[in-house]
Every structure is written in C-alpha cells, then in structure tokens.
Amino acid sequence: HPTARHIAEVVDTIGGHINGGTDRELTVFYAKAARSHFRLVLDLLLEMVSTPLFDPEEVEKERQVILEELAAVEAMPAEEEETLRAYGARAFVCGLTGAEVRKRHIFEPTATIDGLLAGYTGPGPKTVLPAQALAKLDFRLVPDQDPADILAKLERHLREQGFDDVEVRYLSGERPARTPVSHPLVAMAREVLREVYGKEPVVVPSMAGTGPLYPFVRELGLPVIDFGVGYPDSRIHAPDENVRVEDFLRGAKAVAALLGRFAQG
Image (cartoon, rainbow, N blue to C red; front, side, top):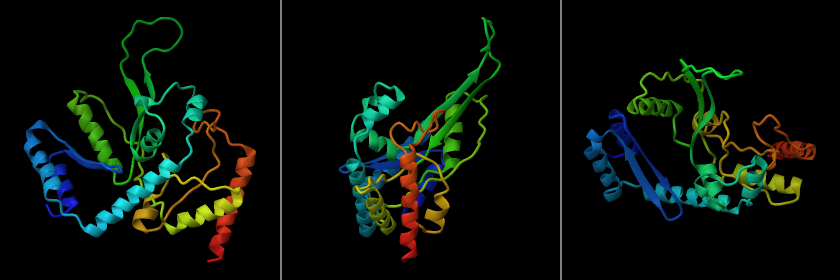
C-alpha cells in the first residue's frame, strides 16, 4: 500500500476505522473492524510500523508542527481552577489536571449529549412507558475527520449494539481545519495584540468551536486565525453568557489595528 490513502480505502471497504495519534515522544496507530477482518487490519498495522514509506522531509515537517503546537499548549496560562469554579465542577473527567486538560480540550474530538427528552414530565405521577425518546448530540472534530464519516460510524455503532430501531437525523456538519502556529499571519497577529494589550498574547493552536474554516484553509490555501474577548467566567453558550465591556472595546481596537497592519502591506 504505497500511500496513506490506499490504506484508508482498504479499511473503508470493510467498514472499519484506522487512525493514529502523536505526542512529543509517542506515536500510536490503531484500527477497529469486525472480528472477521482482524487478520487484515493486523497485517496493515504491522506493515505500517515495520515497513513505513515515509518521506523524510514530510516527517520532519510534521514533527515540527507537533512540537510547535505542544509548546504553545504548555505555554498557555493555567486556568483550570478558574474554569472549574466558574462551572461549579469539582474536577475534570478522567481526573485530568494541568497541561493534560488543555491538550485534551484542544487536540481531541468530543461526543456530547446536548439534551434528552422522553416520557411524561408534567405534574404528578404517571405510570406510562414512553413511546419515544429524543437525544440531541454534537461532535467536535479535529483536522482530517469528516462529518459524513463520523455520522456513518455513529449509525454503525448503534446497529452493532442492537439499536437498529434508532433513527439518526443529520442536522448539519462542518469539516475542521487548522492553521499552523508558525504561520506568518500568526506572528503578525501576535505583534499587533502585543501592541494593543501591552502584554504577550497566548497562542491557542485550535479552538473547540465551529466556523467555516475548511474552505479557506484546505480549498483556497489561506490561513485563518481568530482572537476573542472572553474570559474564564464568560459562560459560553449558557443563558448568562457574557463579556466585559472593557474587553469588548479592547478587542475592537485589536481588530482595527490588525486591519491597519494589512493596509501597510
């Protein structure tokens, strides 16, 4: 299998999934498929680790990107305690602390149950079995994940667990994208923000939000960045979501300063 695409196509034909993950000193490859295809996916994994066809230049490029992003996360201020206090939580899932919280938050996808609706919820008791139930979910994706592929995996998972009668309705989807933290546009924004705020800005490699980044980054080859005016107690998406007026005004000045820098060429 001469390319990563060939390997992915082989796994797709059997309804499986293959992926990998990297850290500073660790690289992991994994695959998931029906038991009847165990030998095939095992052979693929062995081929990948025993006779890899890596372009040395591409490997070094990817290594530098990973190191830059990890360094950016480790340089971020520790706001975990403020976040827990703002949401009235005692601890993060899996007992994570420190930089590991930030790594999981920034680099890993999520599956969130946003709401559940079923049965009788009015006043007084009512001994009935609900005829139907509704769950609304969202998935936060990371680069190289495809919303259509995630939908197919969700449907397959429900079938494999015996929930063939569950109807899945796809509401919307957006492919993820990310601009390297070493891009010149990032450097320009850091310089502008340093001038406006009078302090060194914090670079976050990726945000757990959704926007139309993919067409610009992947199709047009353009960098995309953003900077905001939130703070740990902004309570994003909550009924009392808020920003501070002074932060809003300073953010407007930062946008104007960045546009002015573009005008200077």
